Image (cartoon, rainbow, N blue to C red):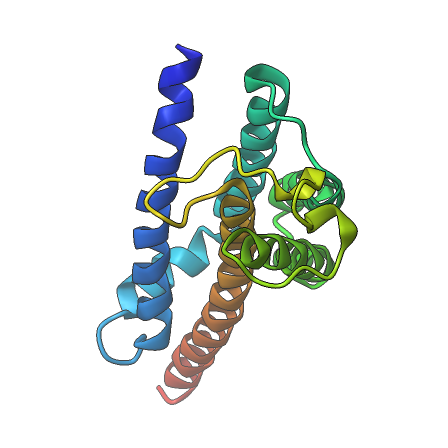
Length: 190
């Protein structure tokens, strides 16, 4: 069973990358064809952000505690920045506080920078830290699927999703306020 889950996770990451591109394009082209997707995404941004953060925690704990992959120093730092987000998003979801992204963005950005650095080293980039040098603990590649999906790229995906959701939240608030202001003006004109 554990082997099946281990084989399935990179496929889920690939599907999430396809969904990410669709959501990103719908935000970019929201005035042409992506308005409905953008509206739906913005409307459900808090539960989606909570699910993304929760999935990150479950995935990292699965790989380290169940599969037995030893997390390196960079993995631990990514966890330090990502783990609190699930609790922050849970409280925000409970309180319906859409301003949560201003608190979470610094954590997500730092985690994303660390994940991007580790991923670029995995793909042959130059190493600035001793732990990512050859034979360093951070240089071990436990997962490599489709030529690019590794554990650091999965972590980077989580950070990018939360950044995308923060952007969708901002766009949704702007669209919603514009539509709400337009509707209130229409009522006052009668």
